[in-house]
Amino acid sequence: MKQVDAFIITSTRAPGKTRKAWYQYILVCEGHTKTGDACVRNTTGHRLVLECAVAAAKELVRPAMVTFHTDCYYFANGQRQLATWKDNGWKRADGKELRNLDLWQEIEELLRPHAVKFKVESMELYKNENERHPC
Image (cartoon, rainbow, N blue to C red; front, side):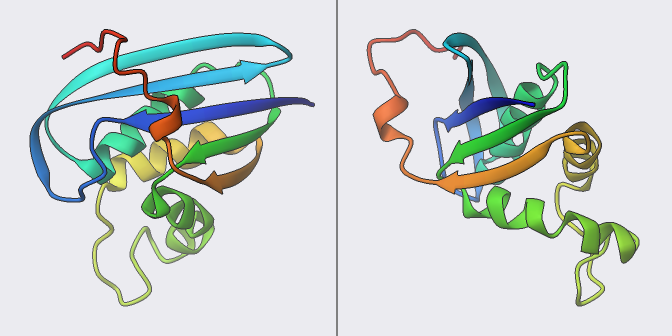
């Protein structure tokens, strides 16, 4: 299995609603880099991170050892809960509905063939203010 580093970069970390935001992912494997970005409207910071992770995961064509670099504990901790949520009928431990269910289910399916780990760190280093973003 090859090692892939997936950097998840978003314009906002706030969990509340935002009118306009962007995300960018950077995939690095054996010296090769692939990037993608998108502008998203009327979303939340947590949903934005999950949308970015889905877009990045769709680029993984073979099983790999994937390290997600993110500043979002919601994503890192949530991904570790996927099996439990799935066993509970996609509900939280307290029986309440899971937020962003559609994206969590897609992430679970897309990452199933991969060995996944997380490195929670500041993504400010990876943001390039001179770079043009889709928004």
